Image (cartoon, rainbow, N blue to C red):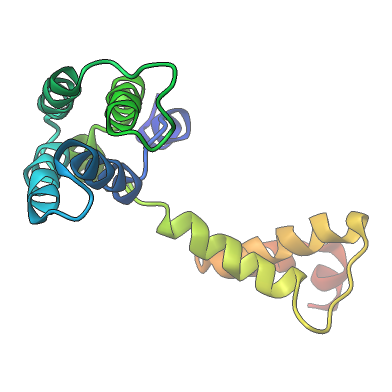
Length: 168
């Protein structure tokens, strides 16, 4: 199996999204408006960046145990519930947060690349002028992907079309 095939099988949790969970946990552990809450998350971000996922989980668990397990009557914003949910989040997605390995392979660790691609496609399909029927959208999206790839696929596609080979 080559590296490209591995990426298609490997799920990567967006690093920024995971970092947001650390700040949320910090606010739950040390108080919403306290300066200590931001300070709580910063070293955990370093752990996460460096692949120390078990350390992240251990720190979150320690604070969750200090607050005790959430009670059934605790709302979704209760600090104990927020911490418990974040411990669960990092335990569940631990295998999808190996950021040093992903960076070493040149893989994106953020969703920006995918979001940018969606915007490029939406620009063509949902612009102010075009009106596409569902059967036409698939074709136009395929052509748009060829054009945006910028690796010669557009030219290879058109150079292999029967109508264009006869004209040449």
